[in-house]
Amino acid sequence: MKNIYLISGLGADKRVFRNIDFVGENPKYIRWINPFVDESLESYSGRLLNQIESKNELILIGVSFGGIIANEIAKHVKAKKIIIISSIKSSVEKPLIYRIINFLGLINLIPSILLKLYNPILASLFGISSFEDKELLKSFLSKADGRFIKWALKSILKWNNEVYPPYLFHIHGSNDKLFPSRLIGQAILIADGGHFMILNKAEEISLKLREILKDK
Image (cartoon, rainbow, N blue to C red):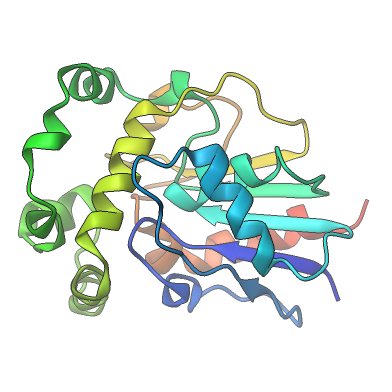
């Protein structure tokens, strides 16, 4: 049995992995904790280490913001493999608009409560169309802490990372609107995959994960 830990996306929970077939593996799930005021990703990811029981042959799988966190956790502890899905592995993969928003501090103008509200534009950005996926997104937002969402968004905007380990594997959708694939380097592309493809492209992603997780 492999030592696999899963990290969901911003404001999401372990249900985001519900369609993934891990074929006999029994991965554990890292839960989000409340960040301290203005806490850095380095500090936050270090505190998440308490949830990792064994650090031997560690495999981290992170989705979206969880991929960034997986990268940061690996700076604290040696990992065997890091797999990020619908995420970015370096700050150069962030769209220019994110840099502008960060520079202008626009995220500070948005009340935390508004970040929890669902709207059709959000569904489009996430690349979801089915009723089931929309309902799950609504559930994620309703259960999430608006202050956590705001902190995480600010952390993504400020994230400055230029290096990543050679054992990092990147699975990305060709139609991701939040992190456009044209800006992503060295990734395994999933055709027509949007940002929420962990749910609606689960079969293809499961196959890619199976290949990556094979011992070589």
